[in-house]
Length: 470
Image (tube, rainbow, N blue to C red; front, top):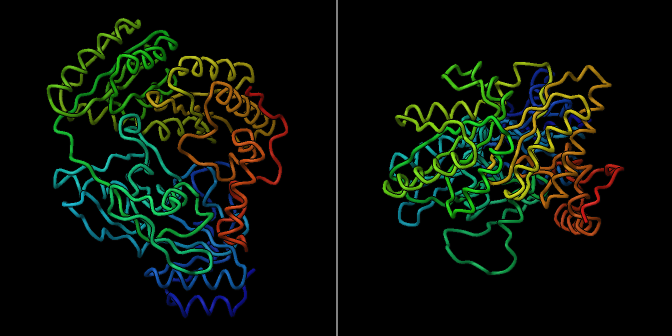
């Protein structure tokens, strides 16, 4: 519970209109896109500039009040739920594109800018910002950086962190630092930029970012490959990469996901097959033509019953948009939708797809699977009802076994969603106790009062059944 004096101090920093402790205002920011998690903040604050951010953080540090930075709340690991109350910090005023530097191929932005606005702005001048999380139309770049978000184009172009060149960060003591910059090379000291990328708001508040741009690809083509054998679809992924081709997008959807997406989008997707691969290639026109032809051949060799090339850019865009709607489509079917992510080496995709199906059957739960098969990042998605406690226990056990299987295959418990609170009990499975201790040491050094997004990453109790990944 915050004091009246603390509230008045916040108003003095950011203005009365930018402080909200009403029940409705607090409730709006008590949850994100994660099922089962909700916690009321004590107050919601919207600073207008970096100096106000620093002043708010300094005040919170002095009074040991928790602070949670908040974007659009699209994350799926409970990361922006204020588990210990305190201050939720909004960036609705820090939402400007500050500069597009065509000479250095960079864009500098504030954390509240919507990701797609960045993509659209640079594509107008034939430049390209590749990271494209499915939530890009509503997610903010600050959230993308904090979670190190991936996306459909991750196979060829990488994830958000691969494009963050420099940051302005407010530390927990209120000091403002800059890391990196518009440099291709910079090895002066520790790589602090990478430290803050993916730190999930537990080390500092990102208030500005300089992002790398590349030239916009001149051409792209999209194909759909249809399968009656899910394992054959998985094996196709490995075969394409083994043939030394890296598509822009290589997405997998199983039958139940496909049916839900078609019912939602109604664009004529086939629903009488067990799985599809959505594959896109971009680049110089002659290379795109060559790769699409060869990829089509490989799909057929790996038992694809049909391979369809999108007839136009408009048709290709419809297919990609439909894939991005997979979560929304599935969420219509049951009261509770739990979208997870587990990543394995792409050579193990076929094995992991089969394992997910077997685990779902073992625990008698409904799991649909889709995801970025080309980079090994699958999204097993359980359709359930949080009010059914017995079923929810089976769902939790099923996901625990899925994470365990991913680790045994050389993978990880999360490829792009982050740890937050959802995956915190499993983090020691991946890092071991020594790895957790290193992370805790960094946290303690930078945030000794533990005000930055407390309760995330480090579980009070790890999952009891430890994975045997030897």
